[in-house]
Image (tube, rainbow, N blue to C red; front, side, top):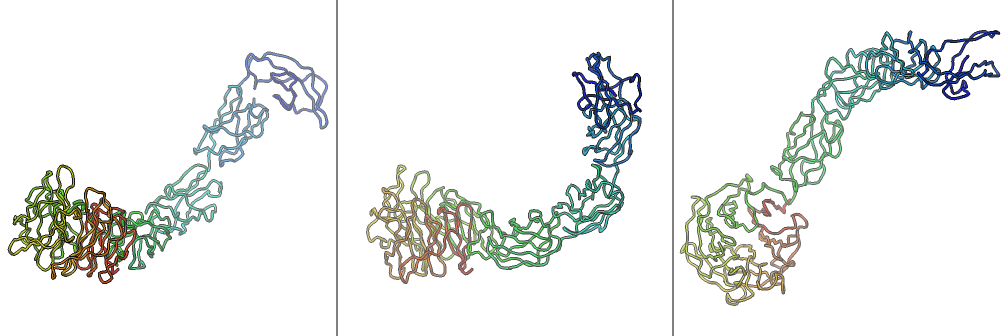
Length: 613
């Protein structure tokens, strides 16, 4: 035969080759070469003879090419096949050098695994994705295209059963050609890939994917990069809910929900408890484990909370509710900010507002509702205070536009009306301490605010007789007159029967709070004996914030800068910590109790504290 290349001394190992498979004879051998030659390129050509042992090359001849003819495709087999099948192309003017033959099926280039001047053997490309594609061969810029097309084998999907199932159940697909190229077969429910359990020529068994995210989906079989869809849709079985345990729990704990046709993917099960979205920590078709939402993300609609489950658009409520049994339970947010707010309790309702604005509100704990009442008709102010006598609310003093006030007002709950009463008999003031017991109101302490300086803390106290609309002075809690630098402003009060407890107010306002422990003082007034006693100091300084206090079952509870509440034991004159870390580390707010349940307002968040839980 002949070998040629654009480099000298071509060999059959590295050059173009033309094989003449003829019996040996003496004489002239010739061949017309019309392929793999570039126009104007100098080539070196040699003859060769080869037997089982030797290769002998003839004399090298040099010529300049005038170019080549295009390759020719006469036929190819098979006409139908699969990805990665071997395809044989017959024709003329092919190259013995594999890389010189650029073969494409459709738009994708194949891998040529064998070549001579008449035959090319190629691999059907993995990326081929059309049912029918032409074949082309290009050599040295000359291209030939097949007259016929190569066809990929298409899977046929006739039917499937069962038409309804759940996650993890098996579905049998019926059709044809599935074993033509089983390695390339994939099954999808819409876009979700399913696990194939068994595959035969006319059937495929698959598992319904856990990650299925639609209640209805088309089943698709993909083979040879060709996809066919089912004539019908697969339907997920309806959600069923059975029970949950426990029925009583606290936030942050786990509850277990039983049922059928839950999603095994936790995020595809939406569980709400009392309106709050719960975290699903573990999921199977018949069991969900759920963490009760903490109350820092929002408030439950009720302690008896409804449990709802939604799976891929279908949702159901359990017939029973879960009891949220935290001692601290968040109520509906308030329309006002509790910081600095006046508050009073009457008829098992709380009345709030006025300080900071003239708006006045009623809170009903049974229905967890706030209702707007008639605005306070007096001048706008901060630091006013008051009390309740015979289910009427009294409010006054404070500071408005840097003017200290002593006006006093009565609010009639039944008529929702305000009436001005006799002015407070003591000196004008802001941040007074108030309480009521035995049919009388008491107001004292506070300070005189002047020229942007908190001057003159008071220690005087006064009693108000609502029947006569009169004020009378009672002994000072310090046993001194009102000019004492050991007065008290912005303190707290708690009433137990005939005893009024006060304390934790600023004292010598020219010095920082906490100096000498004066802001930790705690006093009790006995209305029956008209006398004061100083008690054990509160364990924590209040700093510059307002303390929060309430009474429950005859026991005062107090909170300052830490997130801890302390109760006061009057029999031992001592404080005991009763709750830790249950509220934000912010103490500007209010506290009151109704029907043996305490309520704490911080910011606009209202919390219920029930020590019986």
